[in-house]
Image (tube, rainbow, N blue to C red):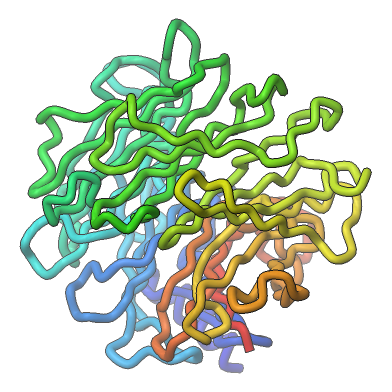
Length: 443
């Protein structure tokens, strides 16, 4: 009955989230007002939007163009991390749960952080397919401030083009002035006449949507290079200024087409100052599309790179994960499944965090076929990984939204996985793609 009571509450009071307590180390957040094709869980972000000191969770439902924020309790626990209240936001601002849908893919990617001097974190949301001034696929980014969200501030690309502006968003202090700056990718942005990808940096303190921006473009432009497919931020060289990590999943690398590359732009950001992080094991016979940099994450001096389409030991698309560090990221550890299978797609997503709770950073790589995370203990990288199995019926885009976060205090970080193509159980065989989000706790 506890599960049913939560679900009934969600139906009677649309602003209350459908929450389910842990099952084998998990906590489920269901769509508060389910809708077919919502894609709830495409993007996720942790932030303190109401300024109460507890972590809140924002969830993008890009299929309906809405974002839902679940507010953390004053004393969150694994059984009860969130209050029975949530807020819904559209491109216009606060919205009723299940409000009018839009096709702009608002909620595709999210990030939260402090962009001004008030106690409330701002929520930044990408809408990469939004029509801007009649230009389809131009894209926008929306900034929501304070617990009520108010009327959001809209950012559009400084260059009018169908660049999918807002596909990835990240925050970091890229100039060392103590203020967070905003990085926004446009992975289809035109460079040298081809859609190769670009990234725009909006300086903070406070952020000025019409002020000057820094532009970074694909250093080796090719058609569909997708520079900016994913972004990550960390001070990798410990100089006190954040660095920007940019994946280019479609780039040619070391003579291999569509091999993929990763770039590190040390802060202060300049186009001419870039480190290229290459696939340590390029193979021209590994076809189609090795896709090194399917996903990237960064923490301290480490960069984790997922390469889910790489063959391993002759096994097609088994996938590989890399952890790279050092002044030129020359130090590499390779992470593969102990029992690889064809089309495992290990490396579809990767995360860095203290999941074991021993003070060291651990490295997690998503194995899409088995719907599991393989987690390598940072104190024993050469040892066997811990396997964290996702909940039953997890779908084929599990992890599209993924973060490591301490939504529940107590040392260890939780793995938060969006499952945007999850189908709500029904007596009919319907692929409804409503979606869900699950918090996973290591035992």
